[in-house]
Length: 79
Image 1 (cartoon, rainbow, N blue to C red):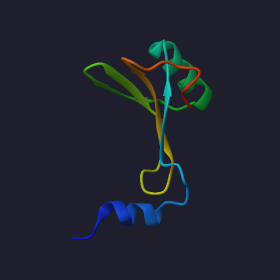
Image 2: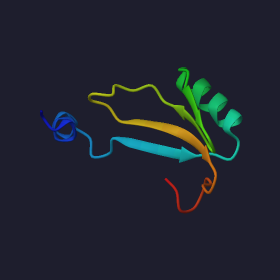
Image 3: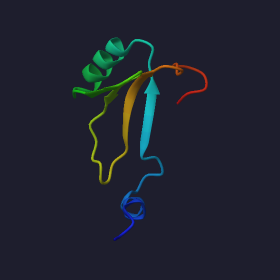
């Protein structure tokens, strides 16, 4: 069985494949990015984490999300 991690790395052209932008006000940030990008964010919730994922090509693109999570904050020390 092939190693999918190695195969995925070979198909990617970017050094970064995932990023998270930490937010304090999730709803405000989601509305902002959806308006600016003119594209909906797909929302995920799990326990203390709430994420809004940007649309991207999983095979060749760079993906990311806005994230509100316990213990994280926007600003210094983050992306």
